[in-house]
Image 1 (tube, rainbow, N blue to C red):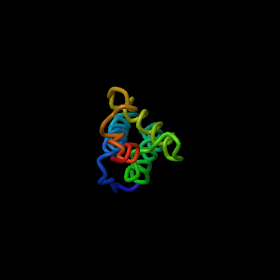
Image 2: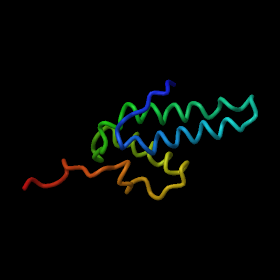
Image 3: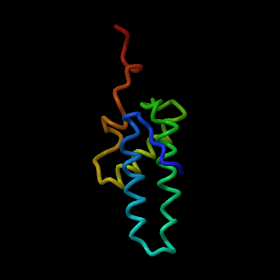
Image 4: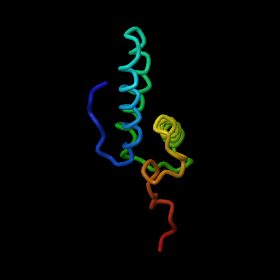
Length: 99
């Protein structure tokens, strides 16, 4: 995975979790250091591919992958409930009734 990072604020926790995974892997025995890479790469790729579309509404196709990624990231970072995180799930103006 390249070191390209998303500039979208909603990607923040996913990318922080990917960085933390890679830092933790550096302290592992050499033969195990590459095992965490797929998870870190997946979090980075999800952030790059999907953060610009967040927030997702429950009926949208991206909702479940984004929900899973944010829950994993919050678990890694020891943050509270990902489903109510104001960073990962910003205010969705599309769900508000028209004025």
